[in-house]
Image (cartoon, rainbow, N blue to C red; front, side, top):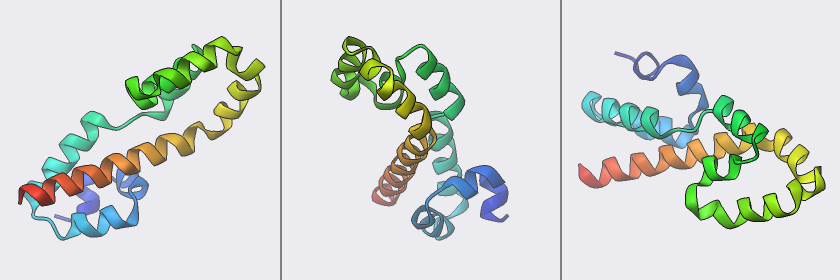
Length: 114
């Protein structure tokens, strides 16, 4: 079965080329393990925008390690609105970067277990 069929077209296209290359060299069991782990942990841009509307997108995207950033965001009212608008524009690229880092981490973990 082709890797694109296992992952789905949109997921396959959103992964960094480095991850796709390494996934192609894994057996089908490890590919399925990757996909299950990735689907359970990846960030969704729709959810990220909903969190943005209610101003807690930093917590959604970065967890507790982004708590300080989130608090500063709230105290400054989203940088007096400028920071909030800027985040609206950059949110898709932030979600893609975080998901790419997640995918690389999962591949690294799978290769260490093999």
